[in-house]
Image 1 (cartoon, one colour):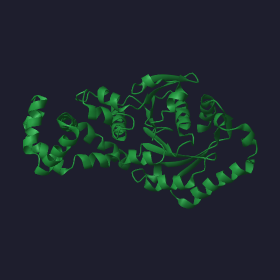
Image 2: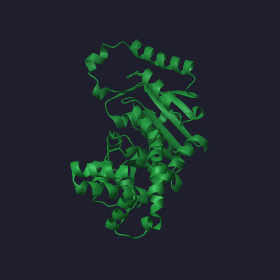
Image 3: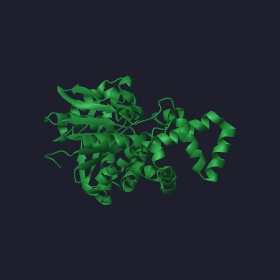
Image 4: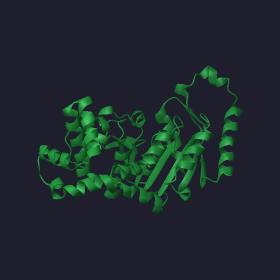
Length: 337
């Protein structure tokens, strides 16, 4: 910990609890202290773009944002842009890689870890704030390193070790494919032959080329495993699990807390957000809900905190009733003290 902030601060929680709004307010709070702040969202819903008035076109690019007269950088996660920015060598016309790099294409969590680790190593920021996907998708993000380990397993690596220097040479793609087809096991050959029957020769060639691209850039993926070690060994991060009295989901909170095994309990904070999005609530219906209903929900969360021993700290935010998310952010910022 440096002063009253950490090198990395992670915000997680179920959907609709105000996770992104709180993460943004935290970015402003730290920017007020003249810290260099980068706010990253890997939430596919990209609610951050609404709060920060960023367009879809800005996804993947680091943008300077000014809110409440304070500036910080913001990044809407894009797997494709991360590939391009890091200079990862790939065939831009490969259809399989193109699909994998889409927001829900299967590589989002892995590329997010690569992006975060790259930003941590750059030392361009005093604090990186990470706004993660809701619920299970956050756990998928934490487990992305396992996907990397499984993909580059021993049998996979042995195939490419057999290729030796030829793999890393400047052989044209066609030459590499021919070498590959000679040394793969009969089982893989059989699989590729089935694929060719169903999808055609062009797809199989595209598939093999995608495998080569991923292997040629394996150092980027393996380097991302450093992020998992950072979470296990570093004292320079904090993670916030956001709960809400508007959407009480204690069972989901318990599931996230118990399964977030990569994260240290010593660095944990349970947040109670009472910031209501009045734009999504019918005022007549809301007026019929007794105040004690929300008080009871707050007590349920506090009771869970006391009994579970899953979190080190508890932080409560005040009641805020607004339809404009920017006003939410402004109101929340001052309460980080």
